[in-house]
Image (cartoon, rainbow, N blue to C red):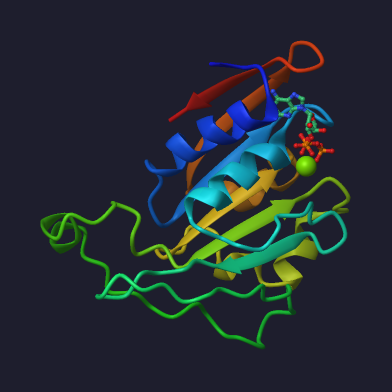
Length: 182
Ligand SMILES: Nc1ncnc2c1ncn2[C@@H]1O[C@H](COP(=O)(O)OP(=O)(O)OP(=O)(O)O)[C@@H](O)[C@H]1O
Ligand SMILES: [Mg+2]
């Protein structure tokens, strides 16, 4: 696909977000300034994350709870949980998610996704740094979607995970090509 604006990149991301399921790990590749964070902002918008998605360059990993509509359709406001060392929070709560009953109620296929994780490995020295802040609690976890900028650095952590590669290429100042490989 071709994007001619940051808004179009976000729109492409939003459509793609509707196809995601808990446990999916999205690998965003592309040079500096390609639009990986812009794409992530589009994904976050789809999940109604109200916080501004910033590049987690210094924190390495940002955890955003997803607003889940309750039975009456009200939504609660989410808050940013800063990345914290493992052990503090324990594992993400187990989720009994039953896709068949979800679709019976006409809900989106990703309605049980409760956490959105944004990782940027650009300044990461090694995978252990991410392990130390608890990344393994999130990668491939059924109620969680992970988005990773510069994923090659942590390829050993991504084995046996359901990964979806999104490659963004800089064509000119405003033009990007976006390829999604399921
Ligand atoms: N079609 C487009 N899609 C996305 N971004 C675009 C587009 N055209 C211009 N831009 C600009 O390109 C930049 C993309 O920045 P962004 O932070 O998303 O890149 P990135 O791939 O995350 O970079 P980094 O590797 O530094 O994290 C923004 O300044 C944005 O305004
Ligand atoms: Mg970025």
